Image (cartoon, rainbow, N blue to C red):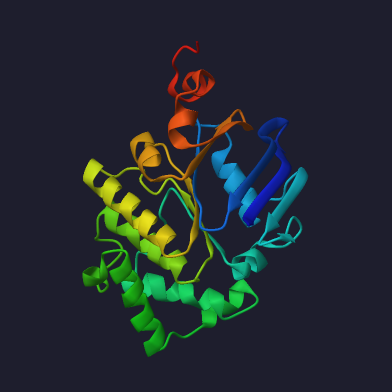
Length: 249
């Protein structure tokens, strides 16, 4: 079953095509990585899928439903969540409070209403469980302004898990991390996938992409260049030329 499907999806900005005619399907419980050089259109593709921006042309289906014209908050309520490359926590709050705050989005049809949601003991306990799941439960009471980037990356994942998504979109979750931290968060992504969540991952860390992905799709200049098994895709001369900067041939 295809959990997500885009058909002939395109989006331009100021006459420059960021995403060009992309048709891509993601199956239930798949871990798909989308790779490509900077400016290839990867983040724009995620924003189109979540409804942050509308497509110029094309169609988006989630869970078998056409959502091309469905607003972002309604797609989130259907079970889709996105983490961003740059973590933007509430720095005046603890890690636990950051996660608890995200739970309000599941209680209301309009996002603004969640701002007035008062968390109870159950929300606080659930936030701690999620922080335990991502490996930083011991730091639930620490301020988001005083913990290292690796903790913030994990907290961001816990925060989106608070909305109980079926489809998890991760935009460069390993960016800025050292070798050990990147490997640990990659392992966490695998565990989340094995726990039943479908994952679409944008990532430049090719070592981890090749290690954990079920399938890889390559974007180049906004268009889908290749897709398939990781080792087979990365061995293609056109992919090496586009992504790795090596001579094709």
